[in-house]
Structure formats: structure tokens, C-alpha cells
Image 1: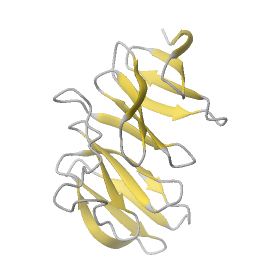
Image 2 (image 1 turned 90 degrees about the horizontal axis):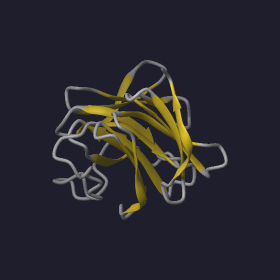
Image 3 (image 1 turned 180 degrees about the vertical axis):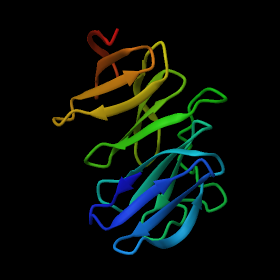
Image 4 (image 1 turned 120 degrees about the vertical axis):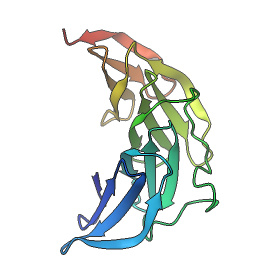
Length: 173
């Protein structure tokens, strides 16, 4: 789930393979139903509020127009930027835009977090890896560091420039 920058537009994703925009007050649906073709596990508005990223349970990230819910790119293939995790099945647990909108950070069931250059989508640097699912990844306020939290009971810091590890894992045992 997410809030648009106007605090009136809401974004919800569902295991029913869709995401939807809502307008407050009144909970009225806005635009088209966004059909991701797999269960939607994570959602994010771009910093400028014009684009939506949806992470699904097949390891893909689809991009959509925030104004009306239409696909951003080829309407037949909303995964136009092809940000596919490199394993056949890997839930995308989190999608986060860097505040300048030029990088997308994803985390997944395959134990990796990745930085992606936007709008073209090549991976930046190395994959940030844990021994278990990475449930969440986020940027530090100064944008120099990524923090990940994993099912392996650790949190880690990484360089937001190239994905290299910073320090030792922080255990939650």
C-alpha cells in the first residue's frame, strides 16, 4: 500500500494479481485496474508521483502511469523495463524509488536486493545478498547507504553506489 504525494491518492496491491488507485475522501476507484498477471506484493509511487512500480510474486517489476493506471510502456507487456530477478521464481518483497527517481531498489525471496537504473533498467553494481529472503530494503536519508532486513535474522548496510557491503551483518538472534 502507498500514499501519493497529494495525500489523497492511495495505491493498493493484492494477491488477486491487481493493483488499484483510490481517491480520498470517499474511497472511489480511479483509472484502470492494473493487472500485473501475478500477485502484487509491493507497490511504490515514483518521487514525482507520475509512475507506479509494482513488484509481484514472479520476481518482476511492472511500471504503470499513476494518473490513470495505464501501463507505462507496451500495454501488452507492462514489464517493458524487464527488471526480472534472475531466478525462475522469486517474490519481489519491496520496491523503493530513490528520491531523485533515477534508481529503483528491489528486494526479493531469492536473498538479493538490487539497484536498477531508471528508466532503462540495467542493474547497478553487485547484488546485495543475504542467506534468507530480504523482506525490506531502503535508502538512507543521505542516499549513500542501503539498509536491508532479512529472514536470516540479520540486517545489513550496503553502498548505494555499487551494492558493496559496509561492515558486518547486524544479528537479531
